[in-house]
Image 1 (cartoon, rainbow, N blue to C red):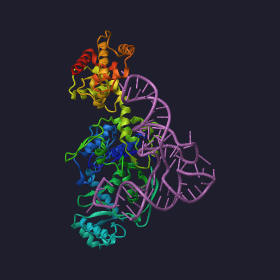
Image 2: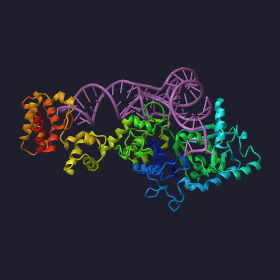
Image 3: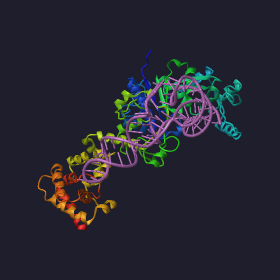
Image 4: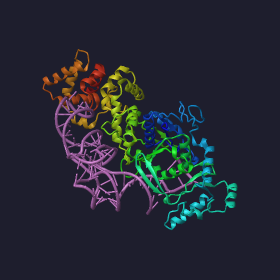
Length: 518
RNA sequence: GGUCGGUUCGUAUAACGGUUAGUACUCAAGAUUCUCAAUCUUGCAAUAGGGGUUCGAUUCCCCUACCGACUACCA
């Protein structure tokens, strides 16, 4: 009975999707596609308190930008599917819309003796917790304490049945078995054992809002949606025994999915996991897309920072996974081919911004001049630069493509090919702008202006150097001085390239301007 | 505190009992060039510590240290 591979990414719409979340989604996607299976998106919005408007849309848009397109859960226009259909037999995909289906499963567990009703209020539990903490102990609602608390296990039947009717703030808790060793297998971590004596009786369902907690909703939906593998973050490993026990209590062990727990993304320096603050502090995005929260606080995104989605996906894939050889550059399709959970690294991966930039640079180099020009034209426009043909911009892009990491770098690298420099880099000027140099440089300028052939790099370069050499002038000093006049700095393209691009008239103008300042 | 997970150059990782412990990023030096960038070459740099097991441990086991996750009517 080979089942079709079906995996899901189940984010909670409590804010923008963190890059670690994107990585989890990516690994799920790669795993599914490699096996010809389905990748499903399910929105886990059972906590109405933490719901953030726009978060769901953000998550889907972010995945879409990355090329991670779901087979189920979202329709063609990127909306979460709300009604079941032939293509979406498991809809709806928002847990808030699946509300009616969970209670019966929770009750089923109570009937089977795997769960019970609990009537302790949040305040009572809070007080209990504080009391025990004051005594230096930790309170857990579990096998050692449950009989001393208010629930259907400790109270007379008549009493709790009455409370069940009259009160609306009770919960259903899982009755954690005592002293049992739960043996689990993780696709990444291998065999893990936990004794149930350290585990507590988790709340599964709440009467107050008639909603399940994560644990119940997760198991029920994974079962109903016929999920075959659960690939999720490491933070879920501690609740894996509970999940195993739930599958067992429901009698679903035959079709229980296999689990794989991914390690976390760590901050580049210091201790702890990667957080929003690190991005602000160290100057790189931690989110795929820009996000503005309710307070108007802006978090930058990879997309807005100029990363190509292919580069972002590639760098994410390499953070905690490797193909087993030296290949580092992969397209999404290549990743689908090469990916394997066996090669996912167990330890947490520190994010490195330099490496992230390197990936983008590699992708930028691979782009066609046409595509980069498409991206650069609007930038030029925003700089107020007009009157240049597309052909001209393409020539510029061709010359600077391999010098840039982002399209946004183009302007900093070669704005002088569009506008005359307004300022001069002080350090460079101090070094090269000396009378002995610029008198010669101006003579070279005259030579260029007197050049009668067509202005091309090939035509100019030879004669230019020949002219300087024959006069026995210092090539470096003269050229840099001339570059200073054209660029405003002693760095940049070759003189012949610059002159060819800006043309004789503009060249003459810049030289005249320089002469006027002497 | 408890439970679980993790630990190879600064970072990401390779080596799934036998290698001069490899690769990439970063950094440094050199080559090249009219400068810068790019490119090429070279270099710096690691098995957390201690016990075992073994002819032999980065690799297997134990202890310690450190890091992390979890410990909610949040996911």
